[in-house]
Image (cartoon, rainbow, N blue to C red; front, side, top):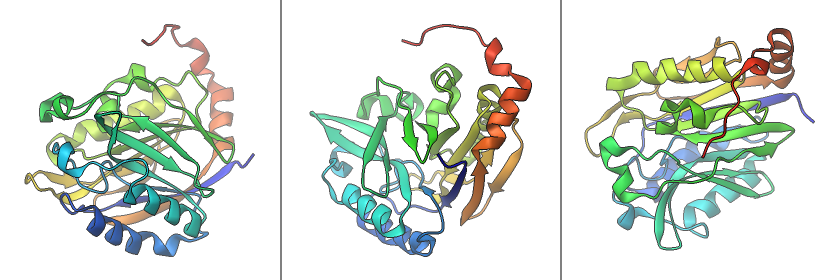
Length: 257
């Protein structure tokens, strides 16, 4: 079991509905991370931007972007994750994929589709919370609008790390900042949020604010510009804080359906 986890957050503009161009752009940003980090986090819908045109932009789990992620994970010796549009069994998902260096893939389908943008009309909602294991860390992947719903993010599995990937617009960025910190505090866990930057094909502006917070809500890294952020997390620090304060032992018990 490894207590240290070296991470990289890719806060970037995305090219509208152009997976090949986005793969090329992202590869140029992450190529220097080989053997330097354990985990690379990309934004939500990193291959297309936050489009509701699932029919024209879907891929499959055997598609080019998944193959590219596997190639990158293997070459860089790092896990890599983010969300993209996947069609499976005749329906479309905003699917978070987590690819390990041995090319093992774990996926999570976004539970809370963003009704304000019509995501609920274009995509099916996920039905299962996912918790995965990587390098001795227990990690819960989540997507954008999930951030507004604390019950779904609730740390009942002794997670060490919550990861949110997003296309969260600048006009509501205060909510992003506030809720990310709140999720870290209430769950006593490291919380990563990776948001995109720039302007999308619908002329919506994004200002980043990708960040990492510790189990007490302290800011570890934060950015308002297009860049690659790196830091190292220490699982032992989270365990120390939980053992000292024991806040999670006093939480209410209930079942999520």
